[in-house]
Image (cartoon, rainbow, N blue to C red):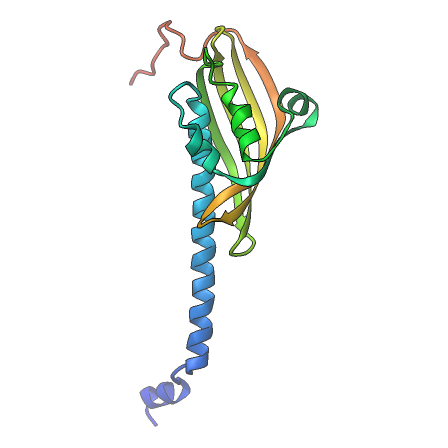
Length: 192
């Protein structure tokens, strides 16, 4: 018997049931990746909108990132006292709206998210965790550098992923001597 015949005789076509099982597994995996990607977008969009909290910020878009019954809370000594706990989409929007003005709280605000983990537990629930670094200059001219652990529970709600529970826990906070966008000339690296 030739080697080709032996190989062919050992190989068999998968059954319809085996193909259906493989297809279902692939569909679950794709759905999980799509859910995790959607949650990543929600958190990035939240941070982008928080970076520009002023009179032009679309607060309806910011609110739409949260479920109607969402919970937003600062945790730990510093953030529990500074930010508190806000229950419901409207309470969260009202809290964040306080940073818009009449004079915006921030002259410059930039959030960087790192050390990301996102896991879609099901077709309806997901959890994400990040380390956030925030560089900001307040309207008063004071600058700060902060880091926090961000934890978020997401829920698929009314056709899209939204934040159901958001927590921020301070890791460190530091006042800075100069504004982040200082007008002083900063030395640039030069080629040798």
